[in-house]
Image (cartoon, rainbow, N blue to C red; front, side, top):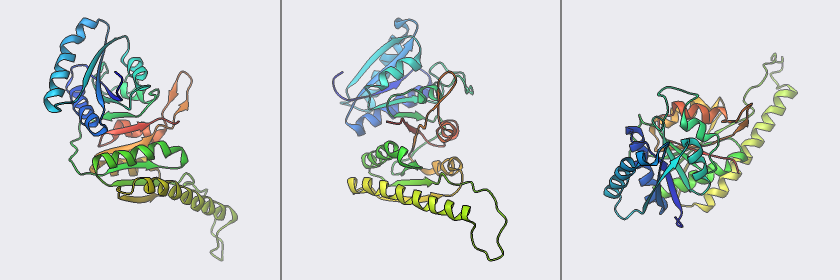
Length: 276
């Protein structure tokens, strides 16, 4: 397929059908083709599932170019390989060979740690309405790829962008208060660093606002752990966007704590953006 495309993983489950529908809608918004992938030990097993996926997508999105691929081997490996060329990879939170409720066996969790491009994980228990804003979790310049995607997504959906900016200097070692009420040198330094960090974040976002003048931005600063604030905010938005913040583990890369938490508990679909 020479056109830019979105890839979605299916397996015939209800969850993957919902992911297919989301992927079709995203393909229309992106002006992209849709590539439907089913990873199975035997390619013949994929024929009826892929045929249904094509029929359903063409009925819901007439004119959308749809291609199918039956990939042999593991689904995570197949989708990670596809993500190198796709503008977006889409999966559901259950199905695709996972065990419901399993953390270690979660395809979405493992794929988020290795995907080479944006990954949209469709939460099966969420019903998003049209017109809801896009949510962005933003900490510092390392989240600029996520911010760029969030602005573009808000522009594509023609909705506002809600930004939650979290300070990295949140935890201050308690000190005895002085008799004069003045801050200690350590507290003064932390305040200066926090204000400087917030200024850098606002400057970075202002450049994106200039490039996307039609996007209305609502920004809030979170002076506590970001994951709980993002979880609460995810209740009434269309989609949330966060950076992967991967860390090297003993056997493989691991996601940062915010992305990890949201993958399991977000009330809305989640887009995880890898670092450049």
